[in-house]
Amino acid sequence: MPQWGALFARIGPEKSGRVIYLPEVDSTNTYLSSLARNGAPAGTAVFAEYQTAGKGRMGRSFHSPEGQGIYMSYLLRPEGGAEDISRMTAWTAVAVCRAIERVCPAECGIKWVNDIIAGGKKVCGILLESVSVGGSIDGVVCGVGINVNEEQTDFPEDIRGKATSLFASTGNKIDRTGLMAVLLEELDRMAADWPGGRTEYLDEYRRRCVTVGRDVLVVRGGEAYTAKALRVEEDFSLTVLTGEGEKNVSSGEVSVRGLYGYME
Image 1 (cartoon, rainbow, N blue to C red):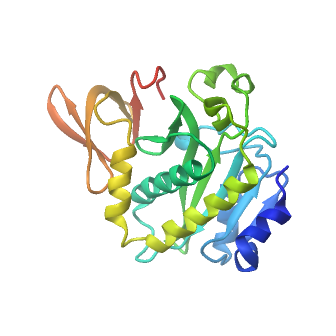
Image 2 (cartoon, helix red, strand yellow):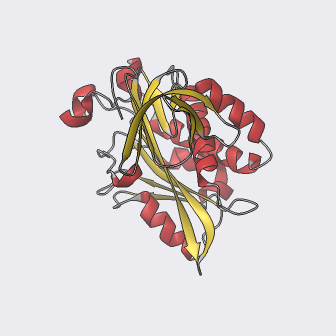
């Protein structure tokens, strides 16, 4: 179990007052969304040792074994509103990559739009959810789940071929407490950079994006078609080339075909 006293000492008393630790929760996103609707300030973060109903994209679950990973949610109340969640998702992916690389020798890439890749497999999932009050979007909860110290055999068989942990991909046991502190620092930095730092985050996102140049399967609702990913646009959407010409993908699901041997 992380040394929470050491974490709080590192991040300081002001930040510690906005960090909540839960031994167990259904979902850190669900828990923080409730706090947000009741006025929790920007920068509030919730960590859990174990999630019984961790959330993934498109209604999927997120594998959250006790004491192995980092399961956290962070509250944004962005200047200018919270409508552009897709752009915030991309910014969060950059922030998470920076945090991971500060504490371990993993080299992180981003599979469009929000999966973090290390050692050829998915090491982290990100899920942003808007918080509405009175019919208006009042904030955004950024959920981050990082596989940290799992053995490869710890993953269920149905995801073992496409999921990994920082330990399994690097051979190095990771100080979870240290990674938590650095992750908070990078998310605070991201919040401070929004929205003026768009060029910096876009350039880094493009550099890290492993989807561009690869064949992809685009799945959107009942439609599915193959294409080649060409580029990430200024708004972080993805342009792909199909037999009918270029198409822009800004919503729905993009599945990567042949990426490091797995399809998401």
